[in-house]
Structures are given as structure tokens and as C-alpha cells.
Length: 202
Figure 1: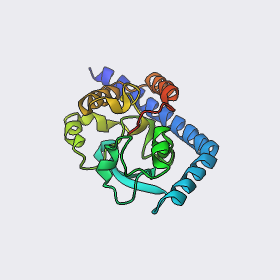
Figure 2: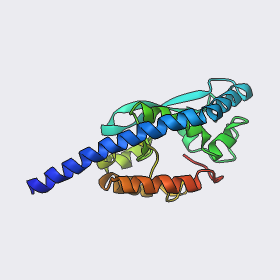
Figure 3: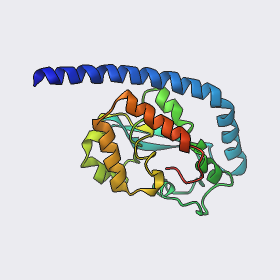
Figure 4: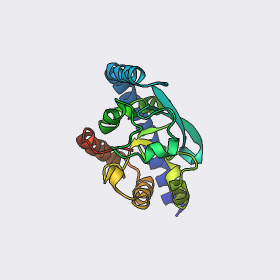
């Protein structure tokens, strides 16, 4: 039994190192490549609505610790943080450019910085807002917090915003107990295929 645990620890340790290397290389490359788009998007936010281009929210990450996650602001500054995540496409609180940014997932680009600095990974369970109602369900599946949160994850490529919180939690728990580079690459490829669909991304 102890030998099996030793092998599992060895595999997980090397997986973590390889994944971190991939996160650094890919996030740094994408930040450089997409920096013109990111800057233009931020400028569009500033020119079309009052307030900062970015908004930061407290999220639950690895081992249950909290961190600040950035997004391009897509809604008015007076909008409550939790309700932003529940916004529908017809929500009147969207800024003039906000609805488009969210449809094509451009609002998520600043999170590449969180990946580069090690707070997040490219692939992992989406981080929840601290004290969000969905946290209670996730806390029953604490294994989810054994891995870093990600920009995309198994739940996002299996229904995205159109599956229940309960099913999202199941997908996240499944991923956390079966992490491997093959699964990460598979999720990234599927994400690329649906990235610019016009459904809402949360």
C-alpha cells in the first residue's frame, strides 16, 4: 500500500512541475501575443463607461485560500459582485462593450496574469466568489481545493453556463481526483473549439 502511495506521490509531483512549466510558457506567450487586444479592450471599457477597466474579486483557490482575480469590467460599477456572475445576456447593467466582451470571453484575458504568477492554472475548477452560495456545495467536495483553480475546466467544456451548480461541482471533483496532462490537453483543445461561441461564459 505504501509503495502505491509513493508512486502516486511521485507522479503527482512531476505532473505539478510539468503543468507549472506549461502554465508559465503558455500564459506568458499569450499575454505577449494578445496584449494589443487586451489593451484595446481595456481602452474600450474606459471610453464607454465610468469606472476602472478591471475589476478584482475575491475567489477561493488552492487549499481554500483566497486570492484576487482580475477581469475586464463588463458591468456598471454599482453592480453587486455576485449578481454579475448570474447576469443574463439581456441584463441592462452591461456596459456598452461589456456584453460583447463576455460573449467572446475577452473579459477573462487578465486572468492569464494570475496563471503566470501562480495563483491560477490554465486548466482547473473555476474559482468561486468567496461566500458565494455555491461554495457550500463545493465545501462538501473539498478535494476540489486540492488543485489550483483554472481559466477553463471540465465543467466549462461540458455545458459551460448551461449546467447546474451541482453538476459543475461533480465535474470539478472528477477532475481534481484524476488530474493528468492528457486530460489538461484535452480540455484545452475542447476549450479552443468553443471559445468564440456566443453563449455566455461565467
